[in-house]
Image (cartoon, rainbow, N blue to C red; front, side, top):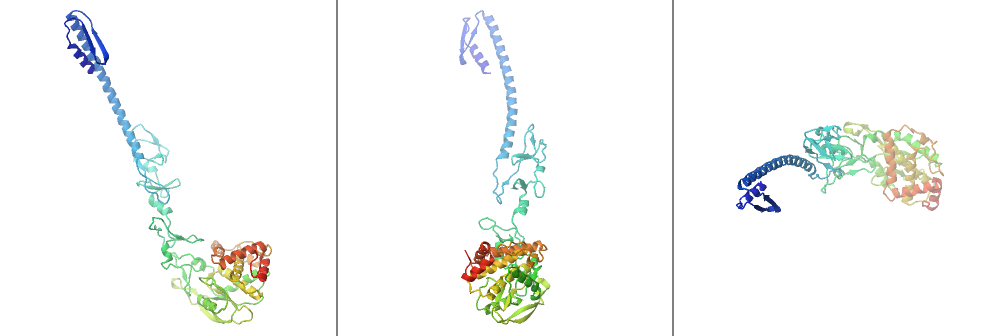
Length: 478
């Protein structure tokens, strides 16, 4: 009504002279016509009526604009709040290098349509989620593991898959293969566990110090829900290794013949009949103490090539499995070793799988062959290294056709290569791979470094030339 006020203010000025010149704000001039007093009053009334009408029209239009602006403002404010709610949150800390997100419920105003990323249908009015740069019906935002909707405040991601945090932990958080519990974090908040380099058996670090037994053959730790077999000499044997274990001297004789044929195929026949005896751990340790010379693989000796006369206790009858997976009723007997040549006997630790027993026997047979061939006294790394090469070669013949390059490898026509070839179970093949891995990755300077030097020499020059060089110089050829 400012314009009306200005008009009324102008009318209060003197008007007796019949002419009125008025000047108002905004540099506007209104000129009143000259004439009689009645004519002026009539003209003034008309001007007032026109001003009132214009003012009412302006107020009406202004009211409609205010109402429209207010409705639009409410819609804009509601949309801004919805967008702000979907964006204004802090993501929780990451878990296992996998992003954790928070689905946020959003209410969009009527008239805004969105497509659900789960079912690809339009999301109508009501509650839905805005997450992962997409929109979802709450029932369509599901866990990849259990297929139930994710209604928790936080969830986990692996690749493009969504998980409840509990489902993600169950599926991806490492569990101990010994106690079957989730592996706990260390004081730094990191998941710390041990793993066997070949079997990749994961276990809590505490099991290395809590007395958890290992299999004396494959080195795997005993799970709490699986009972290993307790042998008479205190060793533990897993059920997989027990399946092919050689338990007494008589049972080992066919394997001994196989090793002899293997050496004959290399034109390295052992002329003397060297006794083979399977013994317990203590008998093997006692026999080792009676030898004047020799280097023995620590922490445990599994085989010996003897050259001294002594009496050893050998296993005549294999034990049977009794209560609590304990072996019992094993029969041993003394065996008097007589020195007829430079080798009196080969002793092998009983209770080991066939392939491990065979590789140990092939190693000890190489000691016997070199002594019977009159090789000079060699350095430990050369003698033990070349014996490990022969053990490794025999293991290869049990699974693969080997090439015969300068006598380095056996031919596929050898009887040892044919023996039960193709009939090995997957488990026994895996054990054979492990025993090869043990030889190849041995970190000891004598057995490990000696094998790698001998293997390289045989690969480069052939077995026959390598052995002749060792006979002449006492060293591996370079």
